[in-house]
Length: 156
Image 1 (tube, rainbow, N blue to C red):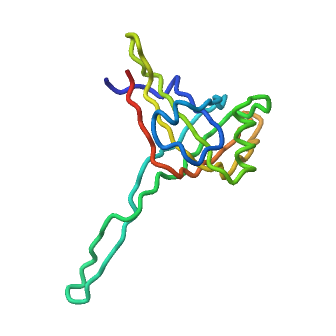
Image 2 (cartoon, one colour; image 1 turned 120 degrees about the vertical axis):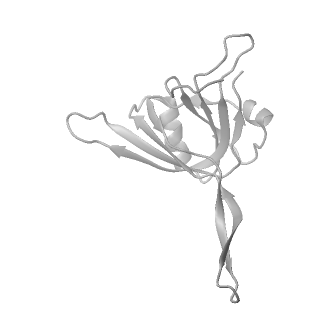
Image 3 (cartoon, rainbow, N blue to C red; image 1 turned 180 degrees about the vertical axis):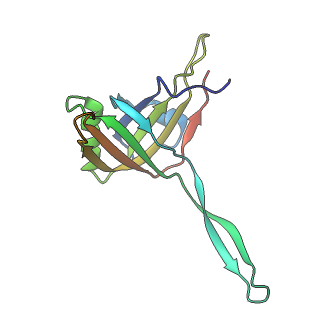
């Protein structure tokens, strides 16, 4: 499958969940789409760099340490009646991890077909409002600290 645009992609929030760790476990959960998402930032594992410097050769050696899946940022057109946006506010008030799902618009044309999908757990750490000027849409910016491996399911 070739490259595709981000148009038609969707972002979903699931229930509070501290244990989902497999595709099957994530797929068994119910999700609500977060409406009016205009941008989803980068996400995915990055290894921390651990260094060691021997006195004898003064050479810094680098090693891979812990993995961090990052902090994802969502830009969202504010809609106080959108259930997904309300659920982000609920998750912000909670100390629990929530399940999340991201889908692309790249499902095949055969049957069965499904889009590329990413699942992960994380904590909603902020939901902030941006008013801007007279030529702007009132926006929200939500951040989610990812606390699990990201499970990527290829499009079919």
